[in-house]
Image 1 (cartoon, rainbow, N blue to C red):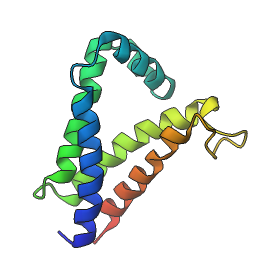
Image 2: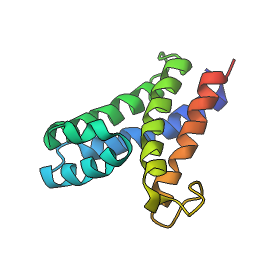
Image 3: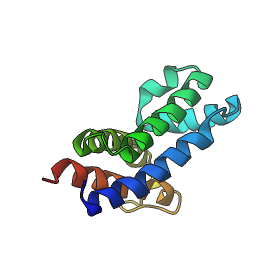
Image 4: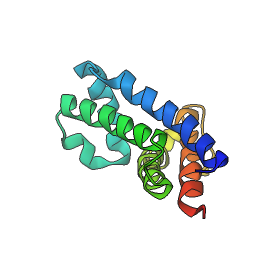
Length: 131
């Protein structure tokens, strides 16, 4: 693994893993709020039980973070996992008009927290295309 890949994977993996670990045992009310927001980007999420959704999100983030941090996981597999994860986050950004300015691309103040996920998609692209 090159130093540049180690940096991309290490920093991003630690961030995503920490996010997933902090969501374990999420109260039902918090899971419901997160689920409602997630359903704006991925409508099928609305059909899940809130507690199941909370576990799904927590363990998905833990899995993506762990794949990035584990050196024997090939960079293309880790990049694909990160790409799918960040694409899901960005779908919430682009499908919610309150997240963007009137042009539909630039983030509004409310959208800044999701617009940063474009960096994770770029990192996924770097991992997938690196030779």
